[in-house]
Length: 170
Image (cartoon, rainbow, N blue to C red; front, side, top):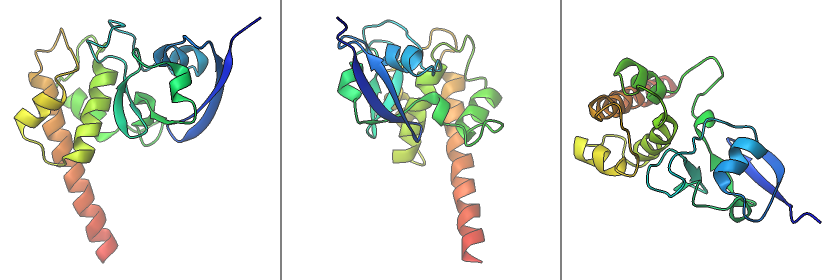
């Protein structure tokens, strides 16, 4: 007899359901149950941030959350950042341009955390960026490119917002 339960989430704007054992971690549910493999499994102890997602508007470590705890919740994963399959989000473009990634293992969690920061603080200082990303470990880049990427994305997002307001106002 299986203990599986149907877990339904709205992930990246789409309502999705899959079966999960009560002990299934959210990161495994996202990757295996929903087939969204952008969220990475890192330390499996909540120390590296590779599995960072947005759960009901707040950053969450998917390796420390059970799938059944997310039943009925709204999730954003790294797959939900890009505005279209053929277009990068400004953060993704900035990470590429500023060499904010190397092996790419930390990148999904870093992007989600950086997006969360820029939604809350559109013009963050270097210290605010470093503080907000302190739960995400990168062993390759030394963080300089990551911080530069977040600063570049912040400038680009503010410019886009100004252009949008200018177009709307005309």
